[in-house]
Image 1: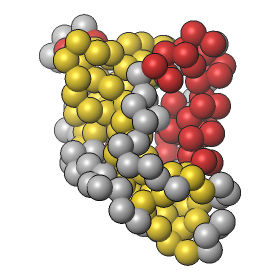
Image 2: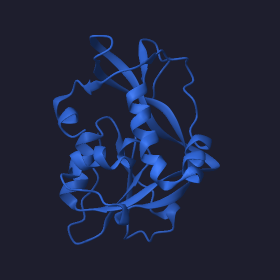
Image 3: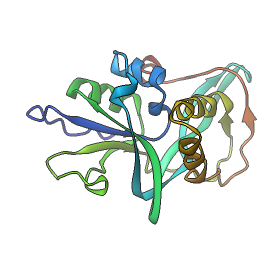
Image 4: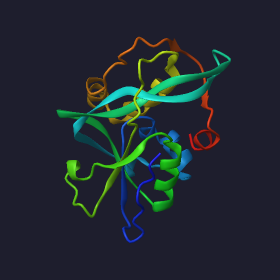
Length: 190
């Protein structure tokens, strides 16, 4: 994980969320406060697509064991756009989000969204990739968490989510049921 540089003099730190951080209940565990509808703005980020290529170790209740699972990520894609949500956080909240997003680097996408260089917008991108997907599972509960975040923003937002999300390159086995991250810090913030 690459922690984002914190700008204590900047009262407005923004986050572009494109996966489970779009889900208020999920984001609130790391923020440690409610994330209200009026704080969230739907936006389109140019130059990226959403992909299922971030690998994390989880415990699957259905399987009764630990396994690697595929999670959402962003990949550079000139000429493409990806939808997501923009919200403002404090420096401490951004640090907790960075700890939660273990394995992802904090990347400033503010210029792509039209913000000045002095107004960063942080998103989290995993540059490690999924590899060949061997021994990796697709968590139906994670997908449901992300889809439930899209629903309140309407059918058009959900349709854009689906249009800007690439399916996994490998045919990963779909696993239903609850899961939890093996990493204790990651688990405590999700």
